[in-house]
Length: 301
Image (cartoon, rainbow, N blue to C red):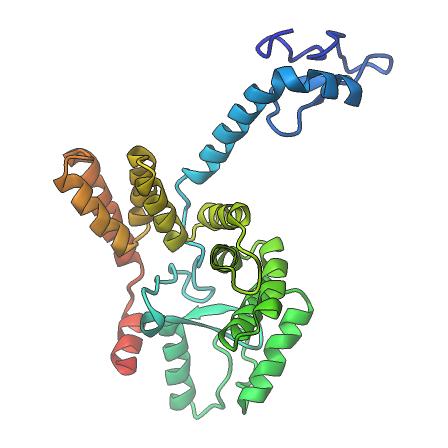
């Protein structure tokens, strides 16, 4: 039986399947979904014939995920003003903060607006999201964060991992990040890709590096995507590299936009494509702005 005609029959023995009580139930190949089998024995028997087509389709499905334009970055929107959280290009340009009480990531504009409200009303300082009183000490903030981590809050787990990492406790950092990544925390996938590449706290494992990097890319982590573009570029896969740079630039990543400027100057992408990316990049950057965020930046600077 060929791959193209095997949908209604077992790809190995050819028995027809059906939905009736007495009919043979066929199950699709769990990896590619291209063919069906009546049982495990037929699946094993057909594996040598199906292996190459299966791998090819799995790679195609992975690429569909990798090159899908995300609706937003992994940071998402501020839960208060509902504007996209702005990207940080360094530790000094972070314009958001995680609240120790509820683990919500709130933009600086909303934090600043809440502080103004409290000063004007002579109110005690509270979380801008859940209104829990602000911790009186770092120790209290740490206890709050660990309470959130104890109930498997992925943001709190990821934060706990980073705090362990910066003091050199790589084993505990990886433990927290693995747990957070399993719960869908994109930033933890990104951090794990780094430790597996560099061998910090674990043996270097390029297979795990690739897996976690790609999971971060799929989840909207733009720096992970830009780095993957650089890897593809070094491999000579220019078309794939440019696709990654375009997706990252479309969501506001400056370094990818700069890379595309050089690609355009070198004739790698067309004027039409470059113009479209320029517009999308500017729109993404503009979407981060608000009067409250501008006021917060003026105060912080």
